[in-house]
Length: 385
Ligand SMILES: Cc1ncc(COP(=O)(O)O)c(C=O)c1O
Image 1 (cartoon, rainbow, N blue to C red):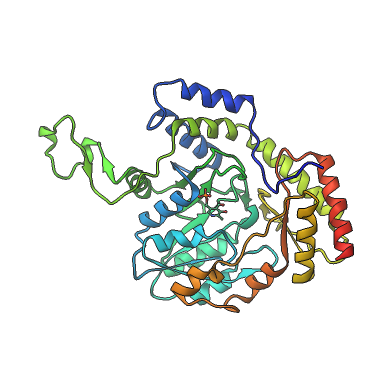
Image 2: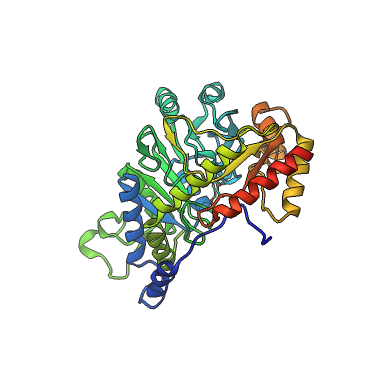
């Protein structure tokens, strides 16, 4: 059997054609295709503004700088996420504080957020783990009460919906961040974006993406508008080169046109797993709350205990089925233990979840015959564990 990865991109002739067209054009970067991609993201999600960036991590960092997270500030995020959701605040000198998860959806628990708020809390970064949206309504209520910024880490969740609104519309947040890494809902190779409905944040994000430099006459702080030198530009903030290229954006536009079929296929595979693995002893399945539509970025099952998890993981890997574990709780990483004093048992629900979880393959080009092969293998392995 050919090796099946747990996640994989889907690229077709149209994608390749779109990239080649830009490669043959005059602008490889800082050209018009970036704005076109940003407009397509706005149209798809309903957000007013989008700033595309070189990665989801860069986009999270930009969102944190735009929030003005500083040395004395804390942000609250989930311990079950990729390290970037917390690192983005550390880049700004801030302190990530974690709030434990709701075990059923594996997303941050609003009740736990409340317990972690201090005078230093500046922002909440809820993560739509595996594509299942967090309880955004409750999180927004908390943020409003304590005057906190919300940055949704929606790197898993382009295409997901919460109470009838698309994730990315920023109905419940100040900013939403996406990643376009190859295993995500759509890809640009590497890439990401920040979406917002706030013009002030949009303008800051644009500036910060490009070294903090502006060439807009109307924004200059030093040169008098009547005497502007034609070559003149100003660096007004300490920004970065977090630009994405035009040919990546061409890929993003082509991919976004197909997102509905990608999501449909993910949903179809998830439904087969849900049906076929439902009554298998020793397996717990992911859920989808009635008021959300998951983008089914990951399909994470839970086994009975950690010994069984190791056995099943190894056996599936050996048989060519690419499994993964999402994620080792961020607070248990050596860097976080050393620099922020986190230790075992700080977040018991997250740690319990981590002990038994395995991610099984789910991506649009996974054919249904392979899905059934994966299911029979899992059934067999779990029975022998
Ligand atoms: C939850 C989450 N946040 C942030 C990121 C960072 O995105 P990128 O890999 O595009 O930098 C990822 C990437 O896997 C992620 O899964």
